[in-house]
Length: 276
Image 1: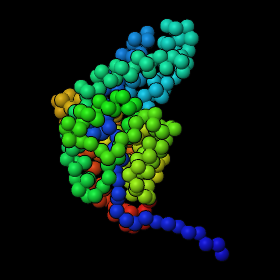
Image 2: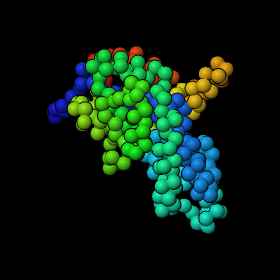
Image 3: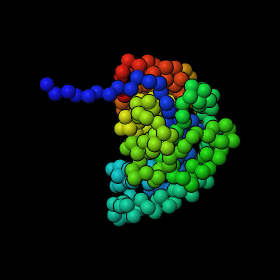
Image 4: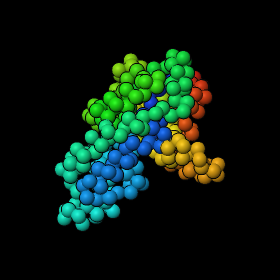
């Protein structure tokens, strides 16, 4: 009879890996969507808000590439430019997009209510705080400066383009694990507001919590969200939660502020020998 060794981690959580826009800052994930729409408009093709939001969470160059591959966008591009969009076109749109994003991002970097207090409570538990983002470093320099002034500074931030591949792959989340000296990966929780965030966490072998109401799936600024009738908020929440749950999230919450009790639930599952 052959012997198969099975290793199980039954200890506590060690780290949380947080997304930025839509999770900790920028309620509704507004900054990227508007910049994408304007960059395409300046390239001669208009895109819808839904098209701009569709690939949210990916590195911004790949996000633009994904938009150009949408059939309606590709057809509109061909009608205007006489040929289907290629990667050289993506390069040109990105060159337009980046300064637009840097210009507007400071206006959309307010902390989401409860984020600072939740992160402080996580630190009080002894957790390290990592973060990953689809923003490139020049954009994140602005976001981090504004967030720090409001009391939020994670232990590490890994930006798009700083690993061989970005989301939905695990490289950025795993770089956080390495830099934070955390082991094993199942002692980590990834929290984000997009399907790509969920896939990043799952592909990295982490527990994954998705944020429904404050992020890209609902896509509303705080004041607009609060002004909605309760029934409408409930409907939007249900649709967003369903999409994130179908992506494979272990848990779905309304906002980061609701994540703390789930850390206890995950630690109980770890103690029973469960893995993500």
